[in-house]
Amino acid sequence: MSDSLARRSVIAAPRPSPKGRKVKDVPFVELRGKRIQGIISSGSDIERVYCAFYEAGTGNFYCSTNNNRRCGGLGGGGCKHIVEMVGEAVKVFGADGLAAALGLDASVTGNARSLMAAARGSETKEPASEVFARFLNDLRYTEMPCSNQPIPELSWFISG
Amino acid sequence: MLPTPLRSAPPGFDEASAALTALDELLLGGLGRLADAQKDTLRALARAFEGSPLGPLVSESVNAACSGPPQEAAMVGLAAAREAMQGARADALAAQLDALLGRPAQEVPATTAVDLPAEAHGLLSNARQWLVELGLAGLGQIEPGAVTAFDASLGELQLISPAVLRPATLLTGFHQELLTKLPLAALTDAPRARWADLWSRALLACLPKQSRPSLQAVDGAKLSVFMIEPQHHRNMVSAVLWGVLDHGSKREVVRATLSGWRVDALAGEESWWAVMRGYETALRETADRRTLVVSGSIATTGDLVLTKVAPGQPFDAAQVAAAAMALKSWPQAAPTDRHPVQLAAPLFVEGAPTRVEGVLSVAVGDGHLPITFDRMSPLQGLDAVTVAKSDRLWGLVRWDGGSWSFQPLAAQAKGAKAPSGPWEDLASAAKTKSSTLANLNERAGKLLRKKS
Image (cartoon, rainbow over all chains, first blue to last red; front, side):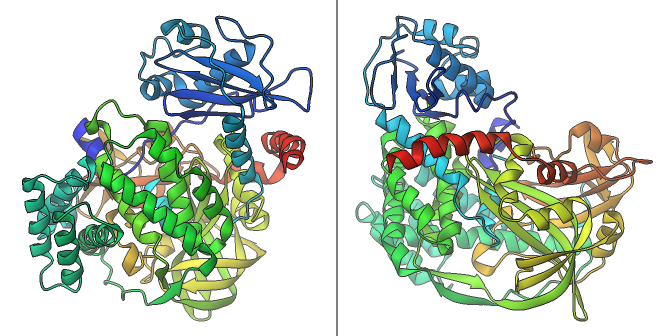
């Protein structure tokens, strides 16, 4: 689609389906502002999840349990949860999609290591509650009622 | 070359498009601080509406916007003006479509005024206020913080009542899209026509009084679904079933929409699970290409609301689609929904698509329509290769970004036993359980209930 047509079009570009998503390991990942943030299941405790984010630009990151306990694996290059989360974000949004959203070059958005090398940030403690709330909000969608009513407004979305 | 009836813009169409573009430019930069030249643009808009039923509202809104930052009432007036122009363009395009398909124009669908439930009024007002703030800031320079500020209200609106499903669906899609796209590197990166559409439609959809197509009861009618259009955003999936409805002595083309909220991890063909969990029988029988015995109601727009569904007999999707082309009654937008994006004329084409000036196209009337893949959902069960090799196509005539196109929904190659489309994925979704949903439900069980 040419640039001028893209501006006149009212249809969003189709979003390709992610391949091989590991939902059990990373049940939630999203882009928000210039951040990738998500929820990563604990490998050892079924009752526990980790909440993590990585912010483009500053390069800052953090990972903690939903009860705000700092992830023991955190170091200068993040932790295995952040690596897993970025890996799933690449599947969902594509390296190009991430690059566009984060304002980075697609050559660095393909995996966590190159992404985190692009901007050297530091561990920045933030409460887990925000990401966790986003995850709980997302989970509600599995239980909300279905509808038999016409929704003409979806004609603007079609395949997003 | 396009068929003759579609070859040139209808009278007045380019002028309406130019007026829209001018208004969208203002929305992009924000209505909060208008320069003198921009105020002149608005005054020209008011003059264009003089003498029309919307004239006084538009003129009042323009005056308000020109004398300071506009409040909600003025923004609603400008959104109404914008939608009226889209409606006029849609009417002109619909007339071209009727000429192309050799069908008489239909009656305007009768509507009923509906009050959205009182318990939703506060949340709808919050939503309008949010949109007013976006309009003041400008759609091209929204701060991410202004988007996240709406999270909590939106979450409540989604839950409060099925009566606000339409605004809740639209706001969820718009909100999500803004979150993913912001911050923009430059003002001009905004998909301006799209966001202006979403903004104005959302503002009007959140008013407490709405107009809805009138309904008539249907009992024990026969529905033969000949094609399926998946429509979805990140958190909502619809199966739009296009079919022929036989009820009493009447036979008409209708569409039935079945939808469900989608958790983001549900992707690809698993997305059908979002709808399947509510409408398993309807989707399973549709997937097997069997008719449905249906009860519910039919709207004046040709939208069928299914409340009860029982299995019927096998049928041939090509025969039904071919018969549908000759019917005189087909779905159209309600008066307040008229917009070029809502134009969708079912078309069944026998014969292989051909390349016209390098673009894969279908023959219609005395010309060709280019096939668009811009709307191809990953749930469609189709790809460009299957479409190119087919010699039978089911789909919709669409209009977007200044041009006509054909959106394929199913394709069948010579010698193939059955058409390719969403049927296969639907059938397998009906047979298996979703492991993603099972995993998420397990997570929800462990975390959601524990917290509350």
